[in-house]
Each structure stands twice: as C-alpha cells, then as structure tokens.
View: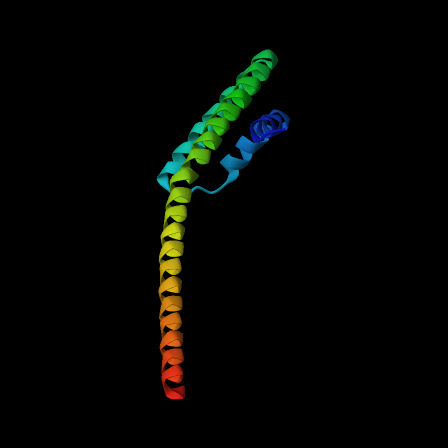
Length: 126
C-alpha cells in the first residue's frame, strides 16, 4: 500500500468532526489562527442545522477534499527534496575530487622524497 492509499484510508476512518471541534477548542493567539477558528465554528454551526442526509454528504465531501489536499501536498514535498539532494551531491563530489587531488599530491611528494633518499644512499655507497 503506497502513501496515498494509506492516507486515504486514514482520512476515511477519521472522525473529522471531532477533529474540527478539537481545533476550535485550542486557544488561538495570533490573528490568522483566530480567523480560522471562527470559520470552523461557523461550519460546525451550519453542520448542526443540516439534515442527516446532508450531514453524511458534507462529511464525505470534506474527507474527499482533505484527501485531495493532502495528496497534493505530499506530491509537492517529494519534489522539494531534489534541489537539496543535488546540492549535497555536488558539494560532496567537489570535496571528494579535491580530497583525491590532495591525497595524490601528498603521495607524489612522499615518492619523490623516497627516491631522493635512495639516490643519496646509493651515492654514499659508491
């Protein structure tokens, strides 16, 4: 089961109305949160006035809308990691490249020192 199906199943089984009531019960400190809280309260008041058939239809549509919005958000998040991944890969590649060059130059210097040392020893023996 992929993420979308799992999310859809979770939303279908969720009690959306109690979630909305919980959101309304939270203390809102900023203006935007207060506006959202008021909108949800208005929706809940309208829900209480609806008939049983309208309530069922409302809840079903609400769940569909939530599933759709969450799905779109999940797809957006999948693509948002790519630029960061590419940047990290690029930086790692640069570090590896220069690290290899540094290692190679150090080894070359060591080899030259060894050769000079051997040449001096061979001259002393003669």
